[in-house]
Image 1 (spheres, one colour):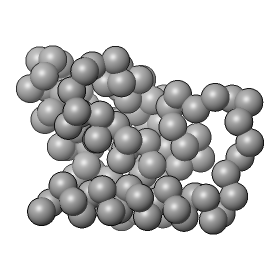
Image 2 (cartoon, rainbow, N blue to C red):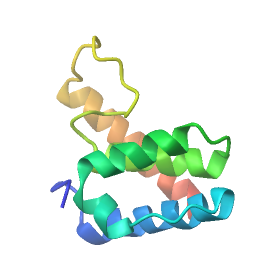
Image 3 (spheres, rainbow, N blue to C red):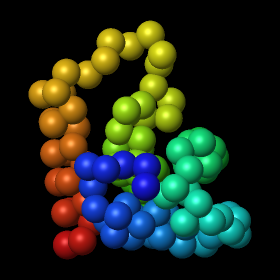
Image 4 (tube, helix red, strand yellow):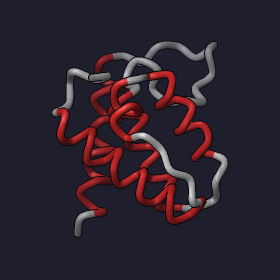
Length: 105
């Protein structure tokens, strides 16, 4: 698994929702299992999805960035930015969790 800090089922569930939305919007079929297992493939798919103008898909991209790519923060993060402190990372994770909670309401 890519991220050890989150349950496998949480990551797989979000990746599956991402897949369904990406397929609805673009018709593209992706391999969810490989996406969860392979960071480079996940980065490629998230980068591809960033170029698609769909609000729901963009929410999945943000959440997946935070969950499966925690060490890079965002796929498009500027390489010259200062690394985030533990407090800043905690604030980001809290924001993602709040956003996810709002989606399920």
